[in-house]
Image (cartoon, rainbow, N blue to C red):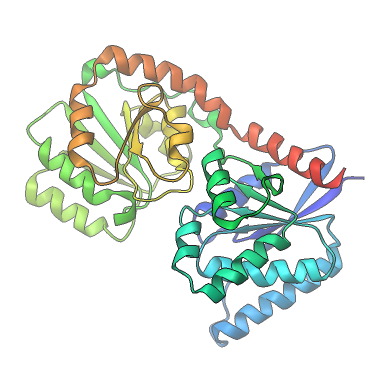
Amino acid sequence: MKKNVLQVGPLPPPIGGMSVFLQQLKNFRSEKYSLDFFNIFPKKDTRVNKAVHNGLILGKFYYALKKKQPDLVHVHTAAYRAFTKSRYLIAMAKWMGFPVVLHIHSGKFIEFYRESSSAHQKKMVETLKKCDRIVCLSPIWKQQFIKTFQIEPERFHIVPNAIFVDQFKDVRPLPPEQGKVVLFVGKVGENKGILDIIEMAKILKNHSDVKFLVMGNGPLDHHLEMEIRKHDLNIEQLGTLHGTKKAEQFNRANMFILPSYFEALGLSNLEGMAAGHVVLSTRVGAVPDIIQDSKEGYLFKPGDVDAFVKKILELEPETMHRISEHNKEQAWKYDFSMLNRNLEYLYEDMLE
């Protein structure tokens, strides 16, 4: 009989890093383990206030644990309010005697800790120490967590995020001899570096062989549209796309850009790799664990528009072809099959 692991976190909608990850886990396959899901963001009853709503979620969680009796509880969390909610869920699961894995997805978790009051910091550390295992996304994050929270290294387990590489197997990047097309995929917001992309496009305005594609939506949609019109920028807005329509747009580009100011891992960079693009990103979060200069692409300091522009202009077709071929192979390290295997190793370590 398979052992059961209860996954606790936000299921779509809303759409965000954790909810996408949990949706991916619906594809988990194992001969030893089965997964159940508990949604911490069900549709809110507008007739009740937030405190009552959260109390109802905690009550439902209690009855889910009583009914399902999972062998393991796997809680997914981020920073700020998401972690505050997770604290109560973890406390309840441990009070009821269940082993707990805490899976930290946020690129701002340590910043959140440092901004918190000493009393809140103490509660955070107490919560982390209650957990039997803590999952982080990369070696960089593991070292930062150990240093920040003074928790023994054996408690941490590295599980990188993943993509379905097979979705990009038929993508053939635009030959660089035909021009340089730079693709962005993500939330059209300040933290993702959209304002920097606008500035890059302004500088490169007179280079007819350079074009930007922006896939996604967000709070700066209208600002981006107005800047394109005002300055006649070579940026095309694609909106949010999924499935084959999304993959098809990767054929139009040969460079992938994610100039974020913070990231946990930078999942869309992996998509750029799988498509065979040269990846241009920033030295934030776990991105340096994935992208190494001149191998998978190039990394820059957040906000360094001139450095991005310089690299876009100086990249030679020969270099772009070499990186493209390497990335097509390298991306398989981050395929969902590897995530599936990493989770099985984690559960075996805890339950066997």
